[in-house]
Every structure is written in structure tokens, then in C-alpha cells.
Length: 190
Image (cartoon, rainbow, N blue to C red; front, side):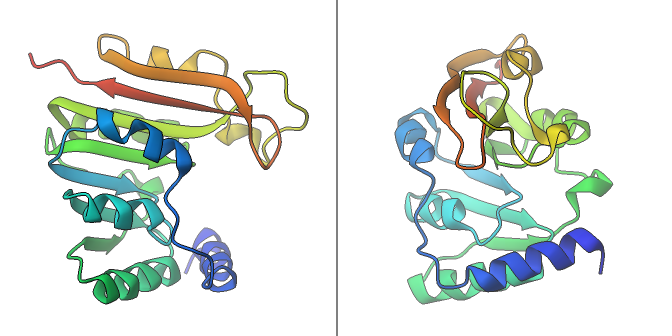
């Protein structure tokens, strides 16, 4: 098991009793999401995946940490939800499928080398949703690892040619320091 998997398995063991609350920003943007197959990248314990499955999405949830996935599977069973939950090392640049998902969701996992596969996985007319740490805004501190922090204006540049339904950056602080950024971008039909 690699170092990252060990670290995340320990984190999810420590947070096993945390509530299953979806991200507040996801609740805000929910009306922008077309219902259909949904891919949740780096899902962790699956708080967003569970919420969206309850909303009628056919959810595929991927993560490296088996502990988080174990908790997600158990909670999905308890709620009577059918999710496709898979262990996946996203750093190996897995095949995510081509134009397969109505929604691809990526919260707090920035791996720039994965972004072309993420964009390819979105079906025409579907949306990509990214939310993570950013250098934008006037908030103290910085996220723990600068490699995983967005530059000012980076998200819209990643989705040139797509319809940006919502883009926010630097409007709210991150609990880890710095600020947050998010985008909901619709893939063109043609």
C-alpha cells in the first residue's frame, strides 16, 4: 500500500463518526446539475456521493483509500442506495471513460495531469464541477501543499470553450488557510 493510501486510510478511520453532510457549495449548485450518470473523483467517505445518489443520480465513486470506501459502502447499504464504489489510484491516470457522465465531480483533489481525462469523461451537455483551494482572495495562510492550490483565474482557463454556469474564487476562506474556488462548466453539445 502506498504512502498516500496509508495516510488517507488513517484519516478516514479518525473521522469515522463524522456526519455525512454534503459540501455546502454542492447544495448551492445542485440546481445546475443535469440528472444522469455521475462520477465522484476522490470521493473520500462519500458524503457528496451519498447525497447525490439520494437525489437520483447513478453514482460511481472513486478513491484511493479503502477505509473511506468501506465506510461509504456501509452507509449506502444502510440507506438502501446502490452506488458503484471503486478503489482507484487517480495518480496513475486511469481511463475514466469517454463522454460517459452527465456530471463529473471533483471536490478538494487537484491533480492537473488528470484534468484532460476528467474533461473527456463528461458527456456533451454534461457538466464538470471542481471545488478546491485557491490563491485568490485576501485570506491569511496557505493550503498545506502549494502544488494542490489553484492559481488566480486557473479554473476558467481549464474550461475554455465550455459554458461556465458558475465560477467563484477568493470569496470565502478555506478552513486550512487561503481561499476556495469552484466552477460548474457545461461541455458543448458539438
